[in-house]
Length: 314
Ligand code: NCD
Image (tube, rainbow, N blue to C red):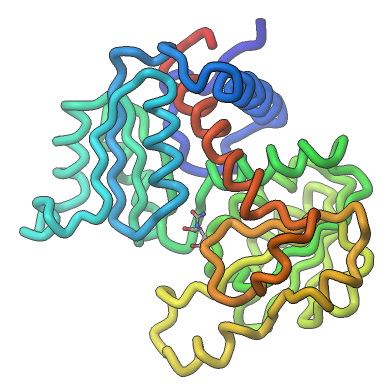
């Protein structure tokens, strides 16, 4: 029996995981996938309650966390948008956390401020799961992205991962880079306009741990060598200058002619939502996994994370 190091733990950053943690989460996610496909649900978390507090918009993260808890037999307090909560009256995050912490066993939080999940965890006895804190991190998205990658390739060694788009503001990228940094042997191409490049701290971590990175502006140079193309949206909500956003939003557009140049064995990923950076004609390409398994994997991975946090033995 492997040791469950997630039991009663907060999940704040993807940097908190070891390779063993990740192996274990992915192993449990596979079990969850089998359960859902065979029976749809289980009673594993019967009697447990999850609050989902989303201060920012969400479809997949919110929907899959709620679905995950319910498929595990648990209950949910879903709050999508805090406009009708006491937040609209000026309540602080610590006070809101204290309230939901007194009703629930685990709290999933999405909030526009960097560091909010860490702060929230200080005011909550029940574990807090960071579902996105501003531009910083989105650790469960990285886990589901990694699960998707592992379902297609046996190991990361020797693979070329090309991450394209808003690498400065894309929190899913920051979390994914933490995970990838644990697996030296991959080549990571970081493709963005210069003003949206990956924070230097992320590059330093990758380099220090032996992962080769190349920063560039043109996708052209690497598209034919790429095994995993990870496309991201330019994060409009992080721009104060909307004219600049308009200029950058379609800096990269992945369309059929671009995909034609890719390896037959490659996969195309996107955390979603997309707003034009992948054209819809790409969706039917068998290499495009974003609208199919990547999204679906969010359910299995979040079931695994919830089960591991709330049950010592899964
Ligand atoms: C991402 C997010 O919210 O960071 N969405 C998601 O959770 N799948 C990516 C994005 O909004 O661009």
